[in-house]
Image (cartoon, rainbow, N blue to C red; front, side):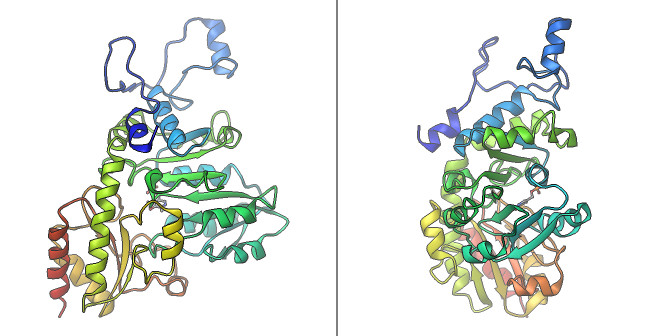
Length: 391
Ligand SMILES: *Cc1c(COP(=O)(O)O)cnc(C)c1O
């Protein structure tokens, strides 16, 4: 089936007991087991079935299968947040003495995981510009086990060529490629099809779409995902609550129509801002002037709805704009049906130093915009009046 049909029907189970059309929500921590011997077999993973919701839950299981299907992966594992899923991916691959490579523009807390937590476990790292596959090749060492790429990258929207990067990582048997595809969602790109070993999403964002829950999901081969499940890394306990999984599945039904509207609105907002006298630069891969425009065109179905904007006048102008918007909400996060605006240097990327940030174009005078599905004329008018209030 094609993707809009899959979003509605893939892995959907109509309840055989009641006939409930929408998949039931199994809001339970534990499951009644039929007898002692079967309980032993289920607990020891000899028989497949549900025992306890940290090990597996039918609602969470349906969400995982649905994402695996959309990403053309064999399996998936859900987590309580995007960072939970990223942690599962990383910890399933690294051990003391290993080396990891990651992109110079990535989500702030992921940056903190790699630069603050992994070194304390004896894992070394190299930061590279992952839009340059040769730079990745040059950074690979005998003990490298992971290349971690975020594309589109938060917040400057750099696009890494997943296929080109995978050609590099595939030359090294021990090196796995993990792609954070949150900004694209499974609707705009499928990293596994392009050669990645695992794909991770903050399901808090476009998959859910309505800003109601935090969640994450990691998809890949059964062999890789099994390492992130019971009886291994799920012992970390970062599991998704059934209600959150059920809520995201309601959102996912409209992922396609939402993304179409998100993308067409974003293109118009980007063009408006690009021509605005108070704007220095717009970072949106849909603009031909963006450094990654050609890669985005090749790799993604459309350009997404995230952008960053350098505003004339620096941080003071950002303060005025963010205090003046009326339709946009001053809020971190992204991918909601409604539009959000945030200040990356002090919000999503506060973990980076000024020097680290400026080197990769995350400037103090920069806001990040998540374009929603409102009528685009209202969004443009709102940004225009906010930019006009700069003294
Ligand atoms: C938000 C985000 C994350 C973290 O996800 P949470 O659900 O907030 O834990 C990771 N990567 C990207 C690109 C994000 O935007």
